[in-house]
Image (cartoon, rainbow, N blue to C red; front, top):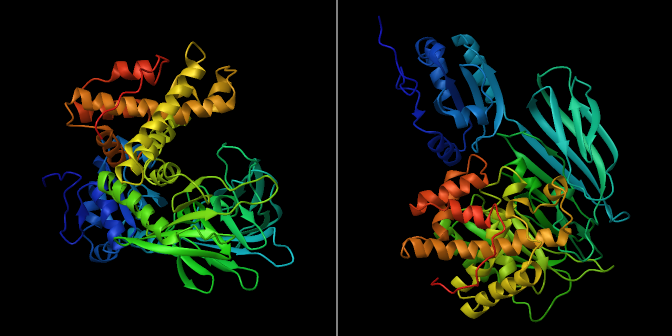
Length: 547
């Protein structure tokens, strides 16, 4: 009887099997290839003997980055919702699933599956703004070679509903149902490969009144527009592309565009993923910009609206690079080529363009503090590279980002240590004034929807204050405590580094943060979490450590 092979062994050396999921993602990104993930059980060994050794399969498999995954790799089994073995998952270079086949397949069937999996899933977004209707955009979203029998589309429009919706699918008239505010379900008669088109109109001036409530924004005036893709383009849930992602803009005469996407022609662009398109902010109309380089990355400082003599764009771009360089040095590189830091002049009607962070940029007022810029850039890592399981972890996403917003400009020489400490001292005074006697709330309960569920009467402004500012104070306290317990050998940087590298492919919880903290320090921080994260123990006075 032939010796049985283990899942990570290959029958033929012709197929190059990666040794880990992390290596597969890295190779797929470097080679710009899709991935073939073989979820491999006991009954899967026939694949090695009859399929993976076949020359035509080997030849096609070279067009993928290939990995065998055992049934004991629970995180990946859960991530890809694997219920039977073998299951073949085809994913983009980031690990996003775009096709799946369950069960053993013969050689000839597998050849057909591989050929089908190489047909590119693509997306195309178009936006048209006509001079006679400058406050309205006509949007067209096209998704090609989609493999599924339903599609959920969302649009993060905060005010008026979109209008004049039309939709179409080649050879398969879908049903259309609004299942939630600005979320729609399309159902098709088959899961066969198809192209879907949706067209609609959307109002562009989606801005809050003067408020620090986080909201998506879009604005268009006489001279320029700052547009948020969240409020423009429908996002298909769980649709991952391995082909072209295009964006086309039709603008009023004389208007230009600057975007985080690569320009391929007159107001035509390409992006790496659907997420990159939807999670972007960009400018149209009249603007100035300056560019600085950070390795292969381009960092743009953009000024929209009225020209200000005191505004040095090149200096602003270089300052942004300083902040990025510090984060890259401490935590690792970020995954895109171009980042826009957009400064917008004041607008009318008692409205303003406040901070709005995106994966590929952020926008804020002209005269904005360095701590604000450092905060928004840090969301590239905390909220971009990693994300939390639920709103219960908002304290880590926003509070710890707030702390690094204070700390990083001091570290990079953009302001003094005294200014850094003044931010913390200000927050501590406000903390004592608000919660010196009672009324405090655990950090894991500060989000509005959680507080409503648990019957809290605390105003929304106080909950937001807790999440950002008490969260920053707890980050400072944790940083000081880590240094104290490790005789300065470790700091909060070590925890953040651990989180960014351990949770790129999965969502973290508060318990995961505690486990990571214990791991990097070799200490038990359970009581710290009981007191300051899950509980309402009063924070000690601010003490100055070494940074």
